[in-house]
Length: 459
Ligand code: ARG
Image (cartoon, rainbow, N blue to C red; front, top):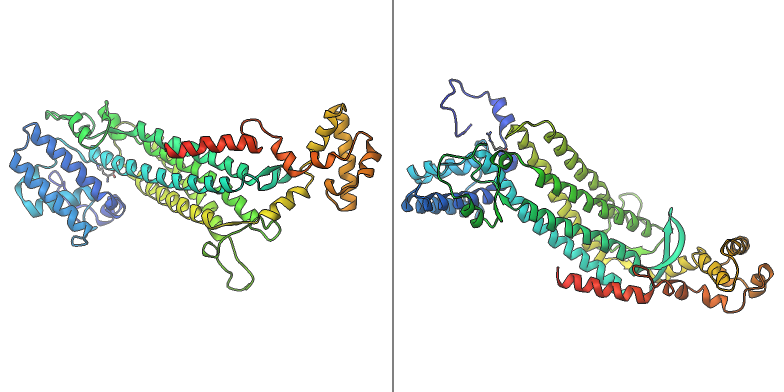
């Protein structure tokens, strides 16, 4: 047991209590942020005349050495300390003596941990955003190559109308684009510095909070010290954003799993991203997509857990808040892993273009267009709907596609049909006539792609 307090205690902490209370097992990953925050704090203390320049230099040198030694594996973060803050401060005092004891002047572990966690999260938001960027690039390049790849669009998992692979991928581009914007938004809102909030009521030392905030790259200090130490909104916002990212990845995974199934065969997942079965030699399973789908639950769980942990906490800091870390770390790690693997899987996946087109042709996805043909020749839409319904029934009986039905059969049901019906219901026509903004038609898709390319350039 190694702790920073104990003066007012007459007994040792019970070992079980100590273990239950300690957080070093998981907060040790904050060592770099803790040291970075301490260096900024000490620079400010010296600038305000609270520490001498010599003390400042000794402390900063000591902290930098601790950082270096931890990074080089020369110094182990021993779990005998209560938390990472205690480890850094105790090691510093061990190494440099008296000046080290002044590090914690005008500071509490409450504002210290709030700062560490924000510094950590802020960097992770950027890393996550870079991974979203990679995924958007991967999606965009699939789109560019597949403007003419026809496939069925589905509603209720039933073939509905023909679209293109570019269009289907574009829906995911939109989703991850919003995720990028959500992350930027969270970054902006969380970028205020809690250091100097003290335990809860600020401090009597003449701290320059704006200066430490500036040193640490924040837009400014937090403006209420009680909120400063007890705000975990930024973590909740991040967990919510991660939950939405995972929901998008999970839907995408589900589609990849369906497309990769023996029945669909729209895609083939690369060998490097598939796994085999220990008993069935023929198997090549989409485990990565399934795991991404599965791990989504874990990230939702983190959001739920932190929301519940926070809901009954009176102001200001309470130890419940220590529970934020394991959830946040796990959700961030999970989302980063899933994004990385999913992007790799997308980049290496083969699209079975002929099979997709064939599937679109044989699912009556052009039935709406056959009805539109009649409407364009003066038939009322409701009547046209009925006529095409009869044609579909006939085709189902014969086991053929609409464009395989001879013209005589068309004309038996409605004399309005002429030879040009085949052109009107070809996949090319069905898709490319859909030219409204956001539709799959080539002209509309080209405009969208132009916007997406620019979006990525300005990312
Ligand atoms: N380990 C604590 C946490 O993660 C650090 C803050 C402790 N402050 C306190 N007054 N006990 O929240």
